[in-house]
Image (cartoon, rainbow, N blue to C red; front, side, top):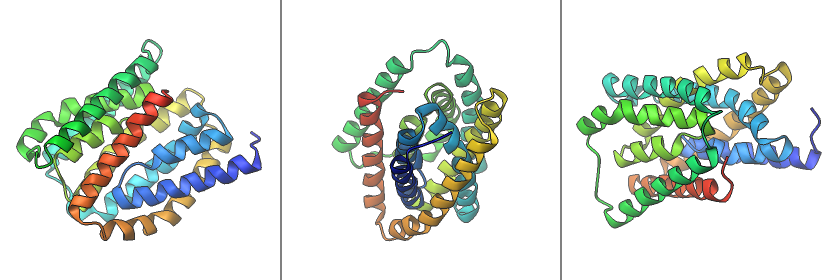
Amino acid sequence: MVADPTALALAALGVALGGVLKGATGAGAPVIGVPMLALAFDVPTAVVIFSVPNLFSNIWQVWAYRAHHLPRAFTWSFALSGLAGTIVGTFLLVGLSPRILSYVIASVVFLYVGFRLMHPQWQLGLKAATRAAAPVGLVSGVLQGAIGISAPVSISFLNAMRLERPVFIATVSAFFIAMAGVQIPMVVGFGLMNWELALVGLSALVLIFAAMPLGSALGRRLPRKAFDWLLLVVLTVIATGLLISPP
């Protein structure tokens, strides 16, 4: 595995910036990190590499924000359905059209962002969100397995609940752990992960851990409303990326 030094430097910068975003919002690191890693390798390899820091960075945030979890009924329903969906999505990968699926999901995200702009005070209550957690988690997991991106659905859902930043980070990190926890054994089983890629993933993890405290410090200074709008910006960037360069 040989990569251009300039591309590797850009990839390292992208991973570090992803760590800053991860520390600030609890999500979004793959949005920056995976495309930048793809400059040095290729998209499938970048996804495999990023599965390692994705798992361990979320484990860290679940522990760091352990005092801010939502009720277990919501968290477990959301996370376990995401795990199941990831398995289903991985097996559906061959039969689905990632390009068409990405266009549909991007359109849904833009509709959601537009709705939030027109109705900034709207909020999804915990009781209704708990009822919706399993189906939303399942759809998010299927997307993760099929096209490698769950954020358009999962982050939109949690953003609609208007959670405080620590609660959002604790919840989304638990959800991402469930999906990464099943993704890594599957990529190993399919022969996509080897020791060399695992070491690159661990190197990326070091960069993310080094950058996350900066993002966390910036995130703590954000008022709740600013944090909410930042998530909408992240969603818009993700949806735009799906339209411009679908998986």
